[in-house]
Amino acid sequence: MLIHLSVWNFAIIDQLELDFTPGLNVLTGETGAGKSIILEALATLRGSHVGDEVIRWGEDEARIDAVFKIEPGHCSKEISEILLESGIDLDDHHLILTRELKRGRSNLCRINGRVTTLSLLSGVAQQLVDLHAQGEQASLIQPRKQHDLLDRFAGVEELRDILASRVKRLRQVQRQLKGLQIDEREMARRIDRLQYEIEEISRARLELGEDGALEQELRVLSNAEKVIHLADSIYRCVDSGTEREPSARDQLANGHRMLKQLVQVDDSMAEKVKMVEEVLPVLEELGRGVRAYRDSVELDPRRLVSVEERLRLINDLKRKYGDSIEEILDYLERAKRELEAISSHEQRVNVLEEKSELLSEIASFAGELSTTRLEASKRLQSEIEEILPTIGMDGVRFRVAVEREEGEGITVGQKSYRLNETGIDRVEFLVATANGEPLKPLRKIASSGEICRTMLAIRSVLCDADQIPVLVFDEIDSGMGARGGAVIGEKLLRLSRSHQVVCVTHLPQIASLAGNHLRITKEKAGCRTVTKAWRLLGDARIEELNEMMGSVGAHGRQGAIEMYEAGQKRREAEVSARVQFAPAEAQ
Image 1 (cartoon, rainbow, N blue to C red):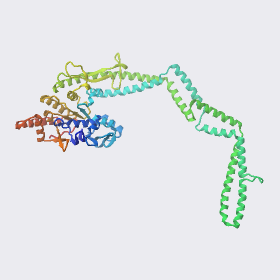
Image 2 (image 1 turned 90 degrees about the vertical axis):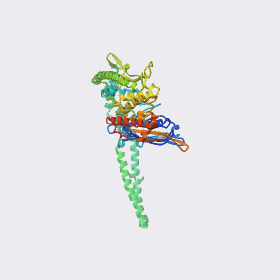
Image 3 (image 1 turned 135 degrees about the vertical axis):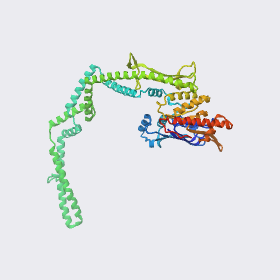
Image 4 (image 1 turned 30 degrees about the vertical axis):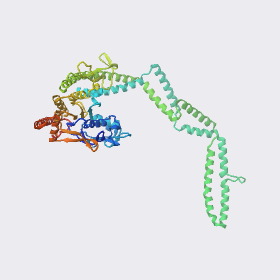
């Protein structure tokens, strides 16, 4: 339910605060006062494209806030999915939608204070408010929405969900079969190839990091004589000298002895003795390490040949299957999986059996769904055509077209039809607004008054199937007299049992039925014109009804009083029948 609407610096509105109640809300006022601007503000929240021209002259920014209360258990599946995917919490069962328009800059959109995209904002707003006004695209214009409403009217949502799940599974099975359906000869060749490759890689018994270790060993084995000679020379230099060529350790030991003698003369060199004593063990350790390395290196031609052959095998496998041992082993696992898949005859048989079962189920469900839709469409169009003449739509024909689309997809009966997750039908509402005119899609009705009244008739029948909580109507009484206006008022009031209804009206017969009456005025503020809104109560409502009736004198006022009292009595009778919204207080 829409609780509150705030508009700042939008067109001729400087600041406007509007409170709404459950049930029927009406906006009245003289032509040009700004009623349509308020609806345009709502349209802007629903994603309507607007430019800088809607920002009030002399201001840099405009802003629109709408506060909605979502009753527990009444949040639609579509809104829940949008909020969940976006990580937006439904704070205290309230949603605050905000759109800020900045002159020469990008819009800023928020949901519950969280910055979001215009697409997301409009997606939520369109699930909360449907707007029937000049130039606005109500959700009922869309064939997909018409399809959904017909299915709810027919009571086939559960069957459609089952069908959708089967169609989704069929798509998965078809993709699976596509991977399994290979030419038999090609499959045999592929199996032989995979078996050879798996055997070749498995026989090699590769280990991760093995190639690096072998390359290091090969470098040592290939240069064994040179390595031994160098290691021996280093050892002699460090720790195994001769009298003629003393080692570094021998010379350092000799220096150590001389330093000790020097300290006896000058003890300031004592620290240097300690330094030499620290270095001597290091040289001894270095010598032992080099000697051990020299002794470990062997001249082993057979090991050299073995390492070279192993590296040759690994490099050959790399050339075929990957640039590293890791990639080769990954290829091995993929080859095993592919071999298992294409050589499994049982798997193909199982998938084919599942496909056959799915096609049979889908054909049955789709046929039943289509038949039920067709029957429901006749009931729906009959009920709507009964209403149309009562709201000034004499001679208007309404049809619910349910057509099966022939083509490749699913066989139902003796024919093949295109298939999607909703079945085999294309659904669209068609209207002919005058005798002799052909039926055409609802979206092609030119007159805003006609389309509003047609929408009212449709929604009156589909009120229980329609999940959008707030319905807004503009110009619905265009060209209507008192009698027709009274009927339209009754339809709006009846619709307000299950929806919150907001209506711009010029007829007192409609205004008298509302639980919330807002008068929109245009006033001078200095040299500027501003739009104001007043919530009318008691005598103020009677005066407004009297003015709308064009009455004068006491007799005219008495007529307004009687109309107001009768309207409120009728409204109170409807309040008790409301399903979704809390009762509105009588004014």
